[in-house]
Length: 201
Image (cartoon, rainbow, N blue to C red; front, side, top):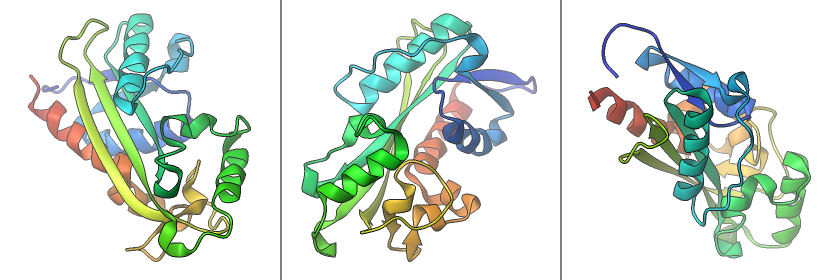
């Protein structure tokens, strides 16, 4: 990942929020992050048992269909009271999109005191040079917080309106993007990936 030429990397996701966030975070690498939809990459079954497995599955499919290196993000919310759920099923928790997912989570935690509402976002980023890459780069980041009793804020996506960030005193959805992109689980995983890509020749 050295040299002055512009490189293209495919993001193995159809999520425009992730594309924007990761595009900004990875800008210092001098790469163009492209959506997998540019290459008609089909959706793949995320049937792994962990964030790492699912990220590798997605990155490999993006490499195969685009012929380019790929980055895949698999991330989700772990709620301690729910034994880590929704976890790897975070995006499909309710089957009814972000609003449905948030509503289901609030129902599951209804009446719980603040001390029992601890949670964290997890993010795993995988980089594959090609579909048969035997040594994928795997970087992980986590972000501790707790689940609010009602949504707050208009920024972000997914569970951001329900995720309270103690050190900032607000929900993730109330944070300016520049702040979120510095402290979030994805920012932490991305920082590790930036370092690893910078060292890879």
